[in-house]
Length: 40
Length: 423
Image 1 (cartoon, rainbow over the protein chains, first blue to last red):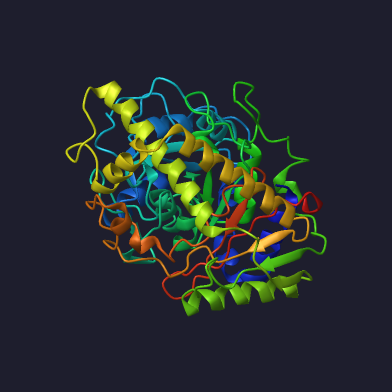
Image 2 (image 1 turned 90 degrees about the vertical axis):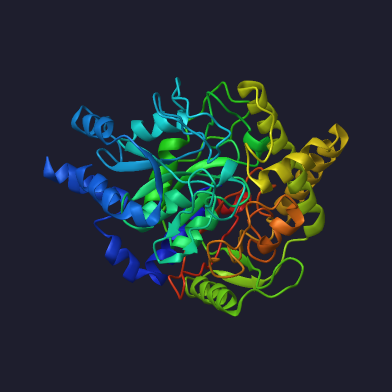
């Protein structure tokens, strides 16, 4: 299993679910980690 | 951490997603020095299966499993912590993770945040409900026959069952359910799942086998544009039966999206004997339920009975006890042959696009956990989880899914790309 699955899934996410991504922009795990770093 | 705990306290009475929590310990951990990783300071939850934390009980959703605090930390937990994640509790599961819904006598039902009357899917349903409700952005999950992918679909999340041997189950387990079961996460985004797999995939040389190291970071990998892939899409179940029309429409929409992204999409099914595969899967599953319950009987001094376990679990145990060594070996060989067939098929197709659930998420109470006749008890599964256990045999494979967020939170797809050319 390699990067291709993640690439296609991410591209589908960007193309098919932009509304979801906008909603999650600051609230997925990596987004929250960025907020934590910014707060320090 | 305070915000996650507050949201858990506000929502969990309705969702029943979290079955054990240690808010004080988690707050102390969050205030202390945390490892620098992709998720430093982010709260998370762990499924009540495997994922042991020292001092916390893990009961696998069963009254039969004593609430004994663990004395050893699981590799998965150590790796989550190494990425900076801070676990603060454990999430609801059906007994021993055997159902595609999260309902048990020990914990009761986890409820789908999209519609409280419906199932979260299972068996990682508590984790999926907690993520979908915004309590945490990511939670531990495990998958044998679909237990990451099914709740990810039912709750509108990303779920990935990684390649066999990619994530260590040590030190207490290895090759769980004879290689059927893996550890991973449910999350809100593909990038989170990629970063979590980066964190989880270190080799433990005590494991009986491991997957070849990845060619690089999965998180870095998703930033690259994939080459044009050849995708097979299944619009029906393996026996030719149609899905719920809403599901078929979602799969078609996803296939169209893939075409729009430049991939070649064809309607095609792998050359698998679905009946043989399901029988083999069931044999291995039942044998492992029998093994687990006999180990618990030895530990507790209590024989498996309806006083100790649920009806469906006891039914699986009885079937498992009657399986011979030769039958179990036949089942494993059948799975391995299927793995080779799928691998050969993937020389032609890079990915296999399918529905995850054949119908929208079931209503709670659909499966009678008191039923000891497993044919009757598991009847609601037929057509509901048409592919997830089929996508289990190949040693090198992975699956992911994402809900459309359509009416009742219907799923769109899972895919399986083990062809070397696709890597």
